[in-house]
Amino acid sequence: MITFFDAWWHLQNHKLFKLTNSNVSFFDRGLDVNVVKVEPGTDAIDLEDDAKNTELQVWLEVATPEYEDDSYSGEWVLVNDIELNLHASGATFEEAVLNLYHYVSDVEAKQK
Image 1 (cartoon, rainbow, N blue to C red):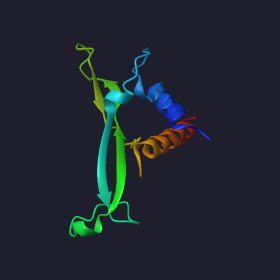
Image 2 (cartoon, rainbow, N blue to C red):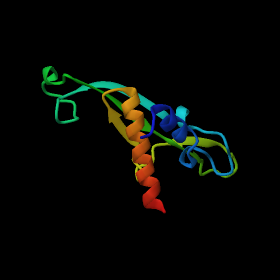
Image 3 (spheres, rainbow, N blue to C red):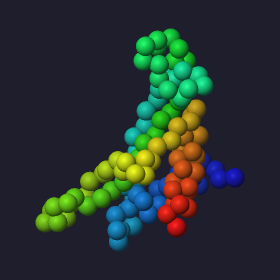
C-alpha cells in the first residue's frame, strides 16, 4: 500500500508534470485545491438546496506544463489537458492525493 508521502513524491517526479528534457517539476505549481461541501452519495454540489451539501470533500485538479505555440518565445504555460482530465477528490487532502496518484497510474498504464 502506498503512503501519502510516496504518492506525493511520485506525482512530483512524474514525467507528466515536467517539460521535455527537464528535471524541473511543475506539479505543485499546476495543482488547484478546492475544499467543498457536497450532497452525500452524489459527489456533487446541490446548487438549488445548499442545506443538502453536508459532506466535506477536497477536490484536486492539476495542469500540465506545455510549450506555447509561439516557437519564438520558448515560454511554457500550464494547461488543463481535457483528454487526461487530471482530477481527484477525497474526504481529506491526503486521500485526494492518493486518489490522484492512482488515477495518474491508470492513465500511464493505458498509454503503454
